[in-house]
Length: 458
Image (cartoon, rainbow, N blue to C red):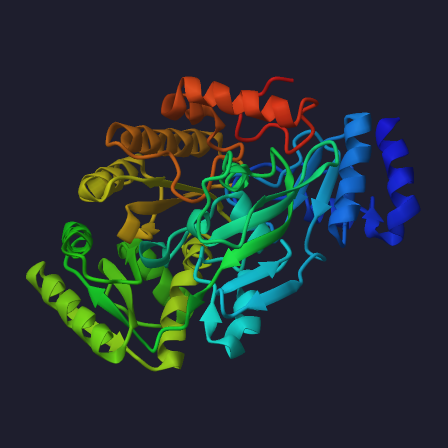
């Protein structure tokens, strides 16, 4: 009866912003990837921090689970409500609260998407650089400590969030961080919440670090005869300190998929997509240095793009890669996994992963943000085929264990969710137990996004 009581109480102050309709429940109970549908019992749309506080206080009193929801683009089942309860849809909290060009800071609500934020910032000469590919919400990006194509230059969400407003499980409202560039005051609660995947609190406001729009931008695409040459180029470019702002990798299968999806005609071979930011002189020098390194490693072509429309077209192709890859096996489900390794181990990790996928018999293109040692495999499975699912899970686990053996991590940007929960002990050992201690201290009833990130305790 607790969910009925919660429904009645929520309706009393939210009105029609509470839903039990089948379509709304289904919209909030699915995943972009292979996870089975898991429906919430209610969907709620708050519009301010105080409403989130009232919702959590009520759910805490009755022990009702709460799972935050943004754009729904996560890949490890983060937003699936494994214990039913309330799906807390944050998309109506989407305001750009303020911009301070002098301090290069913006204050935003969590439901604002990164593309909408940058559109609103255009007149200021500033932009927010973190680009995970999908048009994700800023709150979701913070909750998964997202990174992406520009991390090699601008860093991840960890480097670009200065402070937060967070509602804790019992409804308490706290603020973390400040507008200052640094602080030595107390525990870093901002960092604690970044990547917590909604298990410790609900983010309702973010203070972001902005960056100046570059004077000049140049992008390009470079073809290589084989995977080893492309990855070796990345390693050399990073070690030489050539200032790339993006450096992305596509293997042969990814290239084939993109050609079919976007109607272009790249050679069917590995490619690097690169971008340089700075003054005109800096950009030209960096592009020339990159081209020389690529040529040394056997690059067969390097096509540059300086016009805005040409650059946008190039990155639109990259950002659509996931949907392009799905076209290689129509009606298939995908298992998307990522790892991150030290740059010196990147070539080994990619080569061995490529060999494992080839031996498995599955279609599994590799692509990723290799400038920071992070790459992805998109494994395509026949829907309902338990044998292929088992093979895919084995491949993903092997990738993660290889990353750990090479001094890396089981996920560079997708996060843990429920998909990589079983690998957390292997990476963190006793520290995973400490994460559970923190979870129990802040959420003793375990209502916030249960079944994710930390070892299940109830």
